[in-house]
Length: 145
Image 1 (spheres, rainbow, N blue to C red):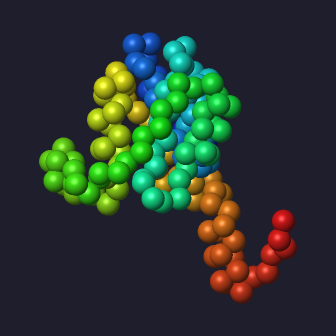
Image 2: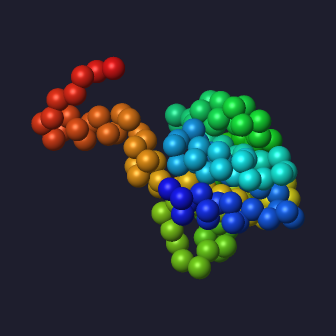
Image 3: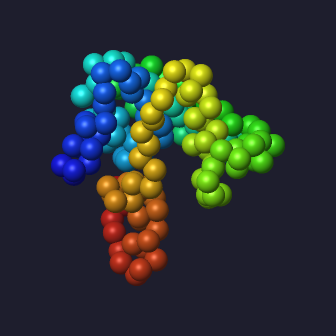
């Protein structure tokens, strides 16, 4: 954990507007916590939602309120329509395109660097419902809490 904290803190510069994409997950919450501890500037947070899908907006809002960030909600409704344009920004196609879409909004807000906790929840014990399914499917029993 110390290397993660040191890395986050080392990347904060006096001239940068700090920002982090948050979902309410453990990974982005850890990044946000250490970023707000180090930054002298207000931290900007972004939560992404896709039209018509279960949203992380409420979790992101709760986390933003807890840390007193300048919070932005980005609702993506035309990602597929802009797919060719978004692909043109990349060296090679990737599975997860939404960060490229959100980067456009962040640049309009003056954000040059944005932290993400992408893919870290599993390493920090997040996603309780997924962990519970894995445990149950392995034949182990656990008490419901």
